[in-house]
Image 1 (cartoon, rainbow, N blue to C red):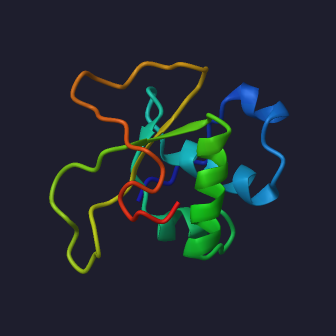
Image 2 (image 1 turned 60 degrees about the horizontal axis):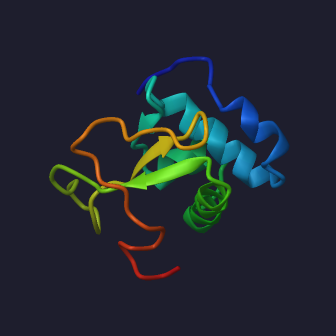
Amino acid sequence: MDRRALSIVPVRAIGMVRKATSWRVLAALGHHASATGLCYPSQATLGELAGGMDQAEVSRAVKDLHDLGLVRMLLPVGPKLRGSFQKQNRYQILWTPHVPMPNEREIEIAWGARTNRW
């Protein structure tokens, strides 16, 4: 596991994010994000890094960040991990509004499209 001692979050989030749980999940996503904002940590990993949050809390926080326009959901790629119910979530932190996709092969998916829950 990457043991960087930092996290990068969008400056514009300062005036947008109101919930502490959303801040902690954004910081956890920023810990795993590439320069283009692309990351794919599991919700368990995000919850652990965000101070022991459970999967439901992480999911609600990610939805909040998505609704605020700070996170984009991307179509999962590759094989399903052993013991997993489905392929791993993929996220893109949107450093600025209307950030382009990381590359031409990426596909954005609607929130809840994989589970039909939202």
